[in-house]
Amino acid sequence: MSSENNPFDAMLEEFSGAAKLLNLDPGMWKVLTHPKRQVIVSCPVVMDNGQVEVFTGYRVQYNITLGPAKGGIRYHPDVNINEVKALAAWMTWKCAVAGIPFGGGKGGIICDPTRMSPRELEALTRRYIGEIADLIGPDKDVPAPDVNTNSQTMAWIMDTYSMHVGVTTTGVVTGKPVEMGGSLGRREATGRGVMIVTRESAKHLGFDIKGATVAVQGFGNVGSVSADLLAKIGATIVAVADWKGGVQNSKGLDVPALITWTEQHKTVAGFPGGDALDPAKIFEQPVDILIPAALENQVTAQNHHLIKARLIVEGANGPTTPEAHQALYKRGVFVVPDILANGGGVTTSYFEWVQDRHGYFWEEHEVNERLERKMVEAFDNVLATAKKFNIDMRTAAYVVAINKVATVTRLRGMYA
Image (cartoon, rainbow, N blue to C red):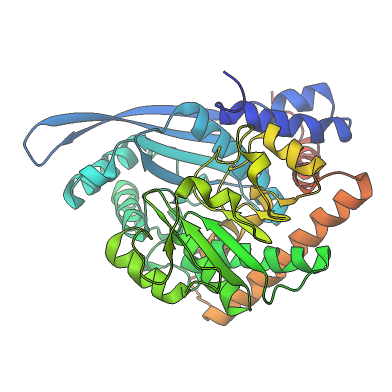
């Protein structure tokens, strides 16, 4: 299986380039390319029709050198162990780049949530957490929302874990409802981080974000918030696509109206404020900025040549394959990698965890100000590394992350 299809192989390929630049010790190389723990569980659930279905769930703790594992839980028919393992590895590097004291983890359940009732989803969530409850906790592994999971899912997880340990433990998950220990600003955090690094990238490249044209693939939480915040600082969102359709308007889409439409219709397709767009054509748009904010492996060896944007900011995890990334870099396209670009979510998750641990909560402007500082600091650090080694931003982000995790691993020593 090539790295075009196997996301873990893609991660290893990206890791390799940075590790060579660092002259990473062979032993350390082995340590940092093997997940610490991979768990597969069976989750029987009584469905609404009375029948029992057994779902397969995964949790991977890739590396916990810097702190507890951190990473979302996704519900999707295509979830598999290689995907979850790769996402857990990316979380390891993302936390290190962001400068927060977490390791990397990820979870997933093979299911189609669009065909399940709220009761069935709650039962599945609680059974899954029951199966992994001994592995998670505020000091061990802190899950969060991901594809097809949300704050309600996190509320069920927090309650299930709390029942298991016999004490209310808000810090076991992040992305919770604010009423039960969630952080203000958390829902918008990933999209806000994308906006911040897009703005900083435009400064670096020497063009004005005001009036810059933007195309967005994916209009879930990350895509919609990114588009909305970029529009608010003067960018023009001219094309948006999702799983079902697309819409374009060369004069600029009304993003708040599009968000309202999407909430009502569950897709951007049919939005009256623009012309229909084939979702497959989103990468071909003649724009300044492209934001892939859907799933992994979207920009590939087959379609990268169609991209006209000079700046790509990865809102999704792993949207660009290594082959496509190398081709884009040779063409002079500036790509801000996922482990930097979408780090706003995990950074504000860290803020939520801190607030839960202290039992003291910040105002939203405080959360956003702290996020601004952390994202700009991380961007500047990666950009300085890219200039120092004369490398692309993705390799530079890996250099920063691997160096940090390797340094702490050496300081801690090898337990035997």
